[in-house]
Length: 101
Ligand code: HEM
Image (cartoon, rainbow, N blue to C red; front, side, top):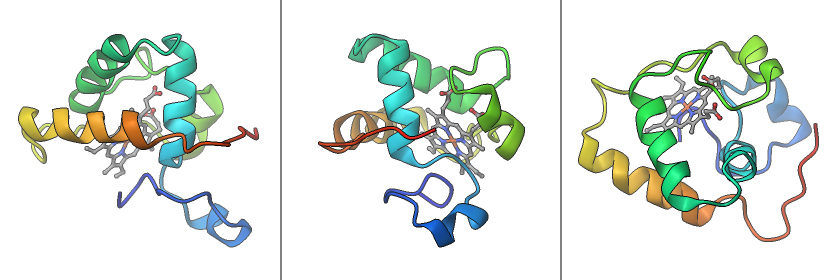
């Protein structure tokens, strides 16, 4: 949550964001994997431990703006990662979310 904010970014927050907000990340991934939960979680659980530009599903502008995300392999256990990714899948995007580019 330090990087992927849970809220919709306010105009003022845009400049200080370190990463795409959680709702945007999950909106894009659910679209990329046609709402297939198993495939989305498998992608996330691999990506978070070993991110590369080639694997990324987010828009190229996101990587240009924020850079590639740091690996969480020394920060989170595989068990914790399952819980975090299940949570992200269930909670984002919130009902009524509309994506703005
Ligand atoms: C357990 C913690 C985290 C999870 C589950 C997570 C998850 C994700 C996911 C699923 C994506 C999208 C990948 C894609 O669509 O291609 C992403 C992107 C990104 N994350 Fe994280 N993240 C975590 C921690 C962090 C942290 C701590 C930072 C900042 C220090 C960060 C910075 C970024 C950035 C800059 C991107 C966009 C560029 C990219 O896709 O690599 N993330 N993250």
